Image (cartoon, rainbow, N blue to C red; front, top):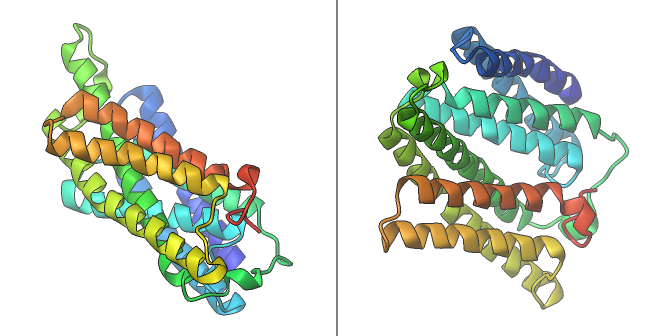
Length: 269
């Protein structure tokens, strides 16, 4: 049943994806409200799918590719809905809806009913470490999208022939504020995720895990640490902060998507 619900959610998310594509092509808002309603309904089904999956397997469903992509997609949707509820920034959908659709689509591709959780992952730490990381990723995606909107809007304002889409974008101040507040949420979450991951490894093996994903996670954390430092100490705002936020989220994607290629403890089952 959880797979059926996820596929229904994917169908609803496809309307959001269509909205994003048409808006980007036409450079103006295209059926945003129906797309928003569809994505919200899809999110409800998506959460129900994850809950049923958890009841079915009796563990937090985050260890398989199907589960990880599904969870990332759901949290990205949640992050968008929270940001939209606070800021009413409709253009954020142009960036969020495609990622939500892609993550959910990939989750459907990777579904394997025979997969199981390794014994080493049957630990209470998984209920702390993994959600912290995924919630952090979702918040940092919002910061990434806000950074892109900032750069597009800045370029449009300086151009003699700005694209029509810029009239729909929020002001530079709002973009920067959304990026900073999302960073202020996401960075502590991934920091706690890294710390709890290290404690988990120490408890199980007596040493910190040293696989490639841990290294990339730490490098990504350093990028965001620099961004926080320069914003607070050097007063970075605007373009410089936007570029570094984009670099940081590229690191997030490399860390998440490269898990199976890196090998080690973080390989999806």
